[in-house]
Amino acid sequence: MRHYGFDLDEKKLPAHIAIIMDGNGRWAQERSFERAKGHEKGYETLKRIIDFNKKIGVKTISVYAFSTENWQRPQKEVSFLMQLAVNLVQEYTDTLIRNNIRLLITGTDDNVEAGLLSLLKEAMKRTEHCDFYTLNIAFNYGGRREIVDACKKIVVAYKGREKDLRNFSEGDFENNLYQAGLPDVDLMIRSGGEMRISNFLLWQSVYAELWFTKKFWPDFTAKDFCRAIYQYQGRKRRFGGL
Image 1 (cartoon, rainbow, N blue to C red):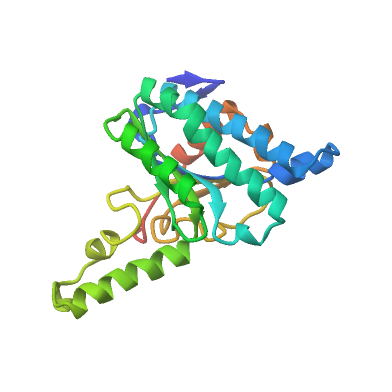
Image 2: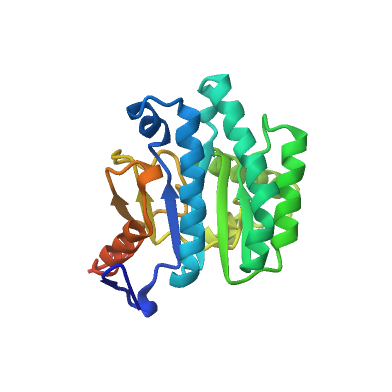
């Protein structure tokens, strides 16, 4: 299939793309806007990429919407991001259902208001039958926190003698992550010019191919999405072998 001048091999699509949507605040500041304007534009960019992936067919897309460290930001900005989460589930869930897109919310419930948690869980429930592709939103998420929480669950299971440590496997560990069953990340995209993974899907991204762009997330386009996939398909993945 050909999009924006890139010939993409349908047989070599990444099964799981993770996106760090960085640069919303800096995009706004460069234009003398409040940071909230950048997050608003970033939300619109996300919706465009969600819609465009219907043409590409990547089966799982994870996006980093709010990290466990983001609570340290100014309260005004945090409140705006919480409202964006409300807007997503109230305004966009019907669109996801019409397009057969399953919604997952991955993260911890800590510090999130009960009303918002209820909305998020309801949106996941309403889309659980959808199977064209999965949109996984990492919200109030941290990779280290996810691993620690998985360890806590495992300790409880072993303490109760529900499992035998001698037979414990990586698969057993994965089953205790926030979203068991998600495929490993094949391609991680980060906008905004920074070149780090910032505590995002640490376990799942162990062999992810990394792709960076200096563009701020509000300026990220479907063409950029295609370029990242095209360059991913040109890489040789060895997974520790030769």
